[in-house]
Amino acid sequence: MSSRLEWLGSLSLEEAEAQLLTCNASRAWARKMVANRPYADESSLIAAAVTGVTELPWADIQEALDAHPRIGERTAAKHQSEQEAKWSADEQSGATDADAQVKADLAAANVAYEEHFGHVFLIRAAGRSAAEMLSELQIRLGNSVPDEQLVVRRELADITGLRVRKLLDCR
Image (tube, rainbow, N blue to C red; front, side):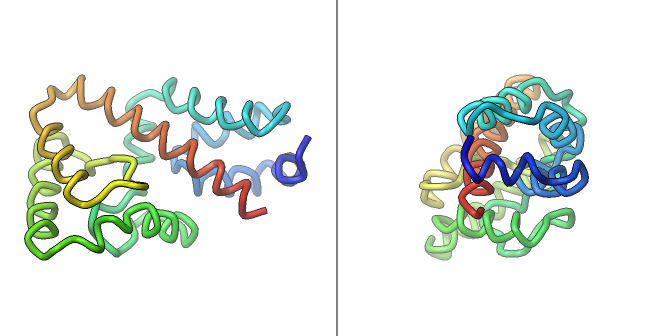
């Protein structure tokens, strides 16, 4: 077992849950992750994190979405921790370098998306430019609610897996 995994396993239930909530703000997800400790290895932990997202009821996905800022916004979401805010800023760095028109289009599309689906547009932003994220947002505006919920769930699972790796890398 790696020392990073040992660190997570050594935390109290409350401390481990708080750490995992920086990866995914669903309390149900974090509680399940903590309850299933210890993990055999880091790959098992990451696989469990991703699978756990795919098994969440939509209300728990919504709870996680509430902690994510809009793409292109520098301010943290209301439920976001300092660590989450830093990760979001790093992940969304492609949006900060965009020209003024792309930023304006992204802001308008974010609003249209939220009005249509009732939650923030979620995309694994790491490694994507603002133009790529805008294009994906515009495509996804055409999705039905059930189809978009499947996409959001996959994106959240990807983000969660990346953040669990980051959490372990911090130790």
